[in-house]
Length: 329
Image (cartoon, rainbow, N blue to C red):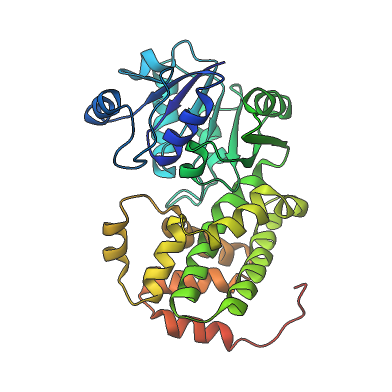
């Protein structure tokens, strides 16, 4: 296939490296100086240093040239860039079947990525979301990973998953687009929470309890939005949750660790150098869960820390002081 990857962050770069062995891949970055650096250095020295580009991986110059003959577009921007990207593709007559890698709920609107895309381009162009337990550094290194691809048109999703699938990057088709997006987005909130827990030194027992109850929150929220509960037992649910909450490469977990250690959020984000999607997603999920009547105490505690400056230790103490409940609730 001819693939155009729009966005040269760590994940877009890592996926481009992984896919270029079997497909014709063009990687495009929005900023001209970034495109030039990628072309000259043949690696993404800022976000994915040490991972040399395969000779076959092309760096696009203009967006039109990068996507005009592509069979599939892969939008690898942060979530904040999804709407302007698909809008530009629509306005410039460059729409092709597309999938995206970003996760979360859009700031201010609280919409899932597929809702954003549908608002901008309608339903005539097939689209989908790729999500699951996958760190960019490991994918770029050729280490095994498995992810889920869910699409607006199940037929498109199954065909695309089959075309992109390889022994090192296994891609499983999933027909629950809402569930895959909710799992991928809300697990970042739980990764921040787990990082806070570890940063406060609360122990492995507490971490396990938090991840387990976090999965219950994700499932309640997803089902309320129309997802299938079984989706959260798969790659885009518990798989991604475990990796992001425990893996040292997780940006959202690192945010939580620093918060638990007493750092301020502006300091943390300034030093991180990457987008941590869970920070913005927390605010939107906390707001939406209250509006639709879904109980999400961990999410509300993380939001109190991120949005309202509540000390991490106090937020955790409030969580621990909640009345006991039946586990299934």
